[in-house]
Length: 319
Image 1 (cartoon, helix red, strand yellow):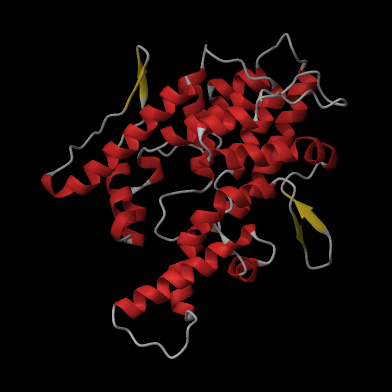
Image 2: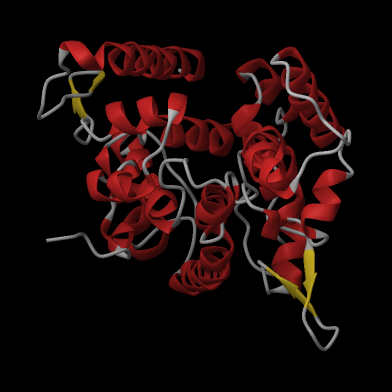
């Protein structure tokens, strides 16, 4: 039986932040930040549903991935970290936004806005150079529509963390000229939007940069809470939670059959579809597989080894 997409509400982190009685916040504060997060989640769900259209070879980056970060955070934080309601909102919002810019829909100007970036121009230059080196003659020095669809995924990946910083405060204009935001509450967006954006961006920073940029906590939103937001703590939780989510939920075997990814993407699908949920044993995070890697899976095994080695380094750096 498939897990309900809202099962993240049963995790330790969700219960700790928004449900269980707290000494530092009353139920009114918990309810406010909980409702605001769920409202934001609904809107972000529409945005991230567009990722598969622009990056069809990518492993799953929809709400199932974002929701599961509540689980991976609970895995490593339960009993070791306290997270207040505003910290839970900022962390949850960062879960939602950290990969949400992997589609043209994340840019109000669409593909035209992306094509004005340096990353796009560099990618096109590399593509044309590779075409010349392969001996392909070109009548024009600009990509065709077919080539644009091949260039776009790499550019979106390169830009997504930087663009994620803008999403919490960015407006989209509807057909009648109204501004719509992912965080609909003006007060909340104004106070926490910048911090959410920076933390979302930070999943591509070094740990040293996180320590430098987030050295000070953000005080409480005066109208809503006395609780501050420890930005280093929240950024580190996002970083580890995202790194840990490598299991089969990210690479469903039947979806892989439909998509038929190629090259490096195929190797990512191959190793992730074999992995079970990680678990804690003593003070270690353990990854297992229900099906061994065959000799033909050697490249996927080495990619898995690299990914798990990266997780090990991240855990040690954050500790």
